[in-house]
Length: 153
Ligand code: FES
Image (tube, rainbow, N blue to C red):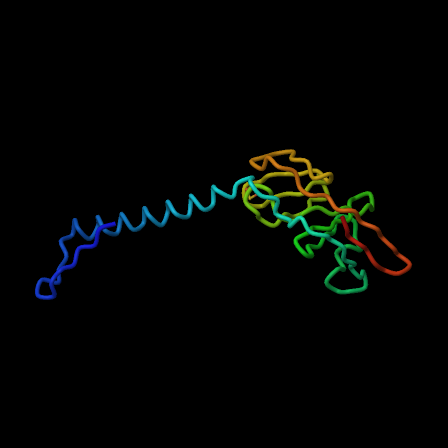
């Protein structure tokens, strides 16, 4: 991008020059953001390929949603939900399209992306795009006598 300096004794920039500079700057900003956003699309697993193994305490206030059917929590980039049938499921919480944090809709028994509306089943499979890659699925072991839920891979 070229830079034109105007002498201080003639500080007024011609109108057409001002709009040309502003338009070019906005174009560069939009192009940069689009390129960065589009390059991530569907290319990465949002969950690091690392060992996952953590336990949630059901008596912890932050996990109380897991006590009700249809409730869910997000912990360590994993969304854990209790389905309508009372089964616990866990999948990577970031949408495989552009990384938006998913929600769980118990009525459809699906994970839902609020940004571009992709939907995934509880096995992580894409039901509706634009996402094309499945979610990572994790194992869930519930221990009600201990009041805990273990999430691991
Ligand atoms: S971020 Fe685009 S569908 Fe989820």
